Image (cartoon, rainbow, N blue to C red):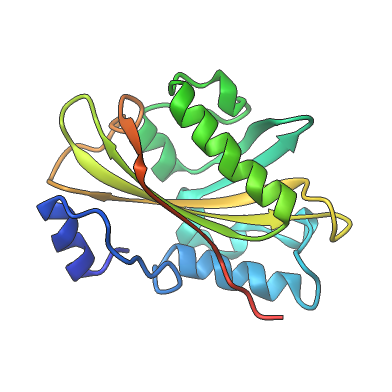
Length: 191
């Protein structure tokens, strides 16, 4: 979860803060698990990953399948994500969701980057919901490959930081993305 200092900055509306995803209880766990399962390879295979190995983060996980040429299908969507979005989009393509073209294009480009580079990516985005709730979404995307070359699945973890107390159900579905305040960085891995 977010540090107290980071949360205080969110409450003040200061969304440009460094975020330590490695210390986050969800993203750090996912990254450590991914690194352990890949061993000496560039990336682990889907068959190497069992989300039930990390049950406490399961509600925050997504499995995303790249479908040629440039589509992405959600194969698994955790309950914390479903609660925040207000609906379950398991089995649906990114471009079928009612998110608006800016959000769809933004995330398609980030998922495409993971697919094409075979590298983990951390994405931090700011939103404001239709009810005026400001929040940050923190995403870690790690690639999976059956042949250690071509990415055929992406494991994602997703957490949220809210600017004020709110009922979170469905808040993300109506939110507007501010891509200009978003942060994206490749995750450095050993070896």
